[in-house]
Length: 171
Image 1: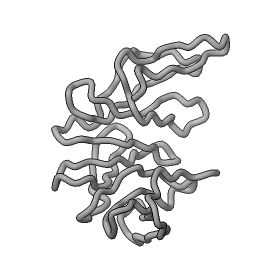
Image 2: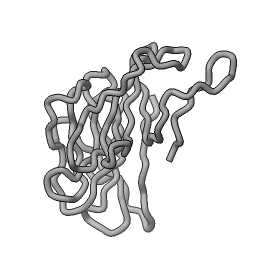
Image 3: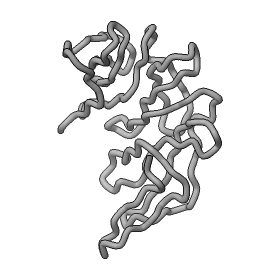
Image 4: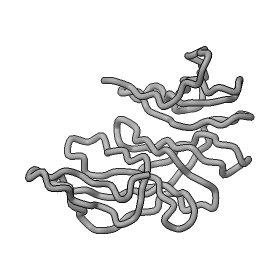
């Protein structure tokens, strides 16, 4: 758990951008890095937040927007490459982690997966065509899966002896 995310300024002096602990920060995909999404339990429940950030590392409006504000645990946010959507994991419908997609402003939340296991750690492909994620839907150790942003074409891509998690894409 980060005890407040730090961004290093040009002068190499750490600049705190939050006063409470956050996890899983993800910078917006635009050229300026103008926003981050992150998860925090600052209200006693894990939710997804968005905050505007100046390139120098200081907050622009000092406001953190709670995008999910739901009694379930909403975790692991990741921006779509075009910055219009955010994929995240939540236990909001059946008490196990599933993947959901929402618009960048928190509206239009749609369930992406439905399994008996836990689905989490999502990451968009650079072209926006796929989302990779970790799941134990078929076995006890976690494996990696691919799915389209519309919920189609689910594919298991690893079959390891141990646990496989936290995948990410390279451009």
